[in-house]
Length: 265
Image (cartoon, rainbow, N blue to C red):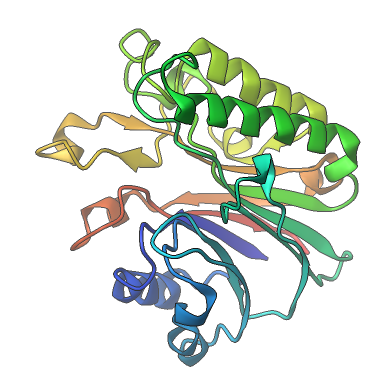
């Protein structure tokens, strides 16, 4: 089973890119973040025409939004309102597989604004609270059984998840407090970092490049903000990883690229 996560930064605007990716990469399941549209506006007909007839959507007008689209039947499990702000940042589904059902959680963690100070930046305070709730959620058994967690977690936790560890220590997404909070999330669920299962931690690994760069490929100042985690029960099923870096250079791209994990069913 091939599962892709991609912060698409407006699914309607970038549907041609999504269609190209689905035709060439052919994942079984596509998890999107920042869909930026209400459920009724989601381009379901476009996905159905590409063979993706099953979907679970948690949309929001103009902001946030997560969706799971699949060639396989889905069962909606929940849409959790983390921090009770009414934001569409989570959706969970169950997918049948030969080894038994897989519960798949799709997350969009708050970016946190520009200033890493909870006293002056409520967006950063929200991000840390969101991570605290994810830790409690994981400790309550969210990772029991065959479970995967994917999405834009908006934190690059490791030294080689960013282009310069020293330069980004005071930049939101790589500050010590954020890294510590995400590590607690990982430990609480005993999650396996599926991407680093394939790419050693001392090798650079990015999924996001800023729109501000004049030439993103030449400067290559990336960060690994997108993640795929699996429960211990799925650890032995990890088969292959694909980070579609070239997607950052497509016409009118998202600033994130698709990340695909392949699991043995």
